[in-house]
Length: 167
Image (cartoon, rainbow, N blue to C red; front, side, top):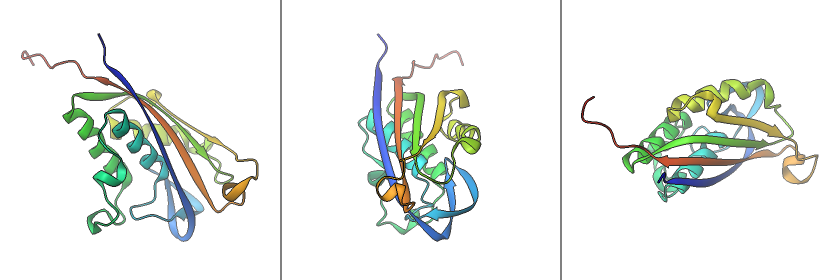
């Protein structure tokens, strides 16, 4: 019997004119960045919460606390890679991830394939197993007012098969 688990992740950040915008490990030019302790990559953070949650292994803050200076301005793709290592240590691997970025700007579609590739590399899965898409908030609320963005992520993980001794 295959052991599958599902995790849900969420993150949101305000825009910050003084920072560069990084989403899914991709630099988005000519747009305010996101306020945060690390690089503010809300896509990577939501995925970290989804994969760790699926494994019952806490969340981004429990592994990379904002109270610790070592995580200040950290590359969130490296954090995602480390979180994937936590999964592997528990005997799991990522099957696929589905991400929705809710924002008025920037447009996500032009960057989605690059994000899927970077995220897949960090999680050791093919890019076609990482879906990234954008949705407008239709002008509603703080997102509609272009104050920031939010990200939802769902991850499916499975127990990794045991390694054979013949390797």
